[in-house]
Image (cartoon, rainbow, N blue to C red; front, side, top):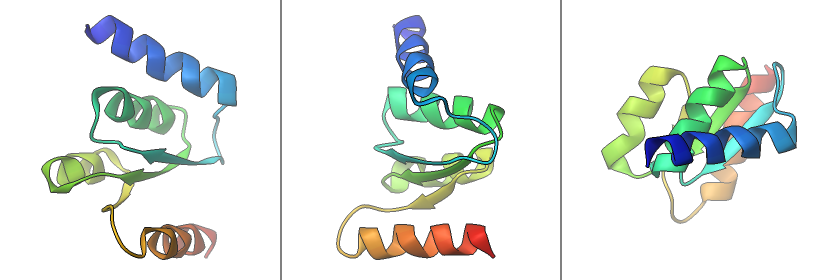
Length: 87
């Protein structure tokens, strides 16, 4: 299953042409494909914003992603993270 997960994440990022200096939102980064997409995007030196629940938030932060939870005001929190990237 892992090869399929990694391949799905890889080809998704390939189709988006994710590269250094890009900012990518991975909604559902706590899923297998989402977690792989975060790792691949970070390897490509993209800035990554990840939405995830508490179970994976710390692991995603340790990788280098900016993490926010789901729920009310998620859009505002994401915009705040983007603003922080720009300063």
